[in-house]
Image 1: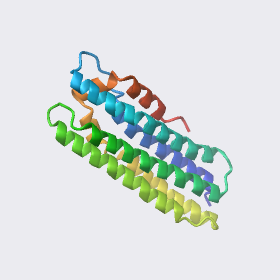
Image 2: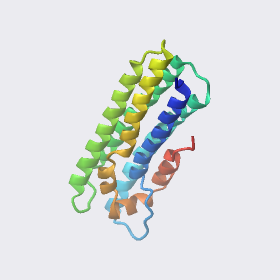
Image 3: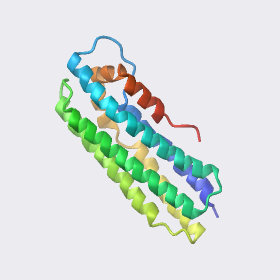
Length: 198
């Protein structure tokens, strides 16, 4: 029988993949050259909103990873994971709202790229909210059942971290990425969202 510890390790590994999504939006692409002022102020607005959310996502990821290194009781694991998923759902929703507020960047198909990125961020937020509900519903009395439930969540989380940040990549391609890479707040957002080794 697999205990909760190795399973929660899988959860942590899958979760660190999720931090990559934030990197897509935090302008970690290297870009040099002059950037249009309007695009520069758009990037500044988005980056400054993303930074605190990237920290929140990194903290949630660390909390789950900490539970994997301790011999935590199932109740504690459930509580920590539930809070982490809630925080991540809130963070992605806030990033989506920030991109929405910033308006469309002045690039080709800017409005479409913005709309797609906002939808993607909201979908990710909903997915983390669903994972929270799943964790909350796990039976902590039966360790084997609990481990099985966590395994299912780890699989979903893995899929989530692999899936669609295509719209985000699309949004920050070209001049937008260049503008974002020149923002100090984006550089620190990508640093705080970098997954830590499990």
